[in-house]
Image (cartoon, rainbow, N blue to C red):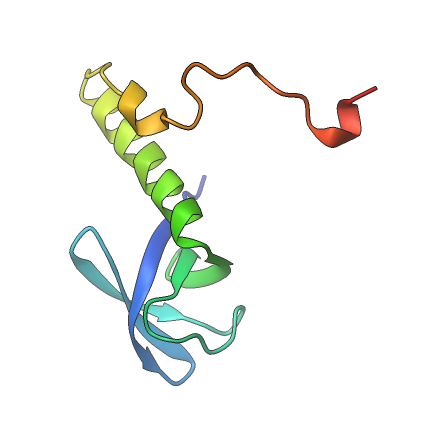
Amino acid sequence: MCIGIPMQIIEPRGESALCIYRGQESLIDMMLVGPQPVGTWLLVFLDTAREVLSEQKAQQIADALEALHLAMQGDNQINHLFADLVDREPQLPEFLKP
């Protein structure tokens, strides 16, 4: 299983870009998403950018990864990391709605 990590570009380098997540820098292959400007958020799998993200979507993914990290340490105080879902009724996707 592979988990996508949201990373932000800090320096384009041709077909790659130097990106950062939680203070850790990595050189990321940009071939699938093409050149992107500094500040762009990416969804990265195995040091390869697979998707350009909005800042909001990148934050939601980062929060979910933080919740996973806390849960693995036995901490169940994670509702604040899912503020967009807490106290919301589940919704069917459009293709399942009558």
